Image 1: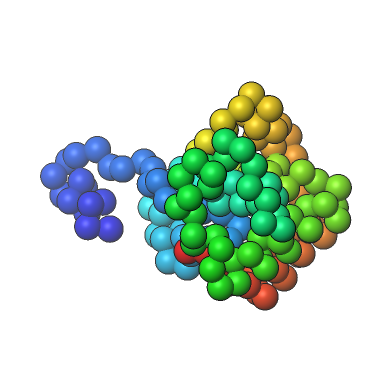
Image 2: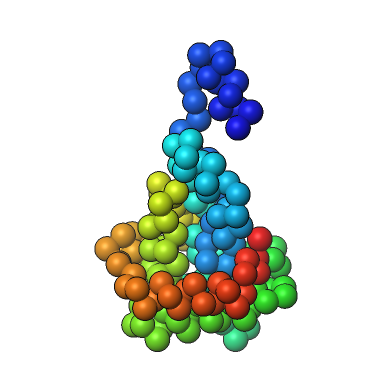
Length: 160
C-alpha cells in the first residue's frame, strides 16, 4: 500500500503485479494480500503452484525420483513437516478420485482464482511442460472445488 500511495503521490507507474507463492498447501496469500491486490488491481503471478513438485504426487510414499528437485537440492523440508504430507496426499488422492492429473488440478486451481493472472511453472522436462500447459484446458467442477475446500479446512496452509 505504501508503494501504491507513493506511486500515486509522485505520478510514478503503479505496480501491476506481485510475485508470491500460492498453491493448494500454501494459500496464505488469500488471508490478507489477495483482497488488497484485487481491489487495487495488482495481480498475482503465483509461483510454485505445484509446491516444488510435491503436488504432482511424485514424492508420495517416500519416492525420490532421479533428477528431481528434492534429489538435486534436498531443501524442500517445508513440505515434509507437520500436516504437509497428509494434506499433499489428500490433494493427490482427490485428483485421482476425480480422474484428474494432480499437477493439472493444482495449476488449474491456482490460475482460476480471481486475484491470479498467471502461474510460474518450473518444468524440467518436455513431458512436465506439456502437462503443465495442458492444465489451461482443465475446468474444475463444483464437486472438486468443494473437496479442495474441505481438505483446506482439514489442513489449513500446512506449508507456508
